[in-house]
Image (cartoon, rainbow, N blue to C red):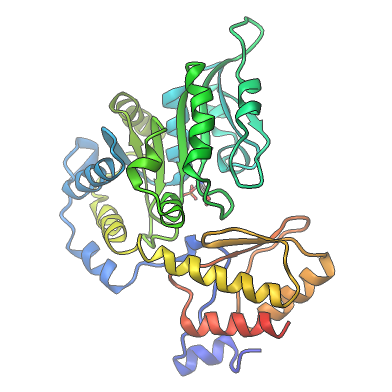
Length: 348
Ligand SMILES: Cc1ncc(COP(=O)(O)O)c(C=O)c1O
């Protein structure tokens, strides 16, 4: 149990924050807000916002791609990618647990007439090359036209090794498919795999990056890739109502996050590893994740007790029935909050 309730801590000025529901809860800090306040802006729908242009150029350069497009969310970025790659009746092959299939409301089907073929996700978060070879349809009037392979890295806290991505991408390319990466947590993957950003992006025609998760910016995603696809994406963004005007204040936060908050993701990974070790000492060993997210599978009575004990220690968590318990480390978990978490787990 923490010594104080959250309300008492607040009154005493003790920062015990430990909100493990998601890394999307991170808030812009004072330094980020200062650069936002100073940002040069213009009308981005007219292509006149210098901060957005700088953000797009920075990410295109870092990932070794032609161009980039600033967007309001990761969902819109993935949707625009799928619609830029695929026409009506064309197919996206992806993982059945990947965000584009499970958590984006079927947008590519609803709005673009695309078909999604969700395939089994392997324990390391990647797809199986032989299974993808089977999923790619023959040129036959009965089938949708297989057009795009969409991968995810990191997936559920697992950094999928580059060689595993390349293996599957090679199968797709040999059959003439193009490739997209949902890299909502791309930098968690590069940091965990100690892999270059260009190298991890290289197998893909488009990569979607989120700035508003562990990087701590308040809003924004960027779709990076081949210039023809990004050009189509710009038109699609307008169609979807995602064109923003003086959004350079948001791009400035993104630039700040890219400069200051990518390397420090290693601290979140180290804390997750420490938490995993503490869970093991408490007898909880079915834990997946090698970056900033842990997924725990425990019996429902253990889950109930664990949730009660973490909640009593002031830790916020999301949990659902028949879903693994998800714990997400990020930059706004304070030292005091993390210590309270570890002590609650160790005494569990
Ligand atoms: C892997 C992955 N892709 C895409 C998204 C969508 O991002 P957004 O919430 O900005 O739409 C998320 C959101 O958590 C995600 O985890």
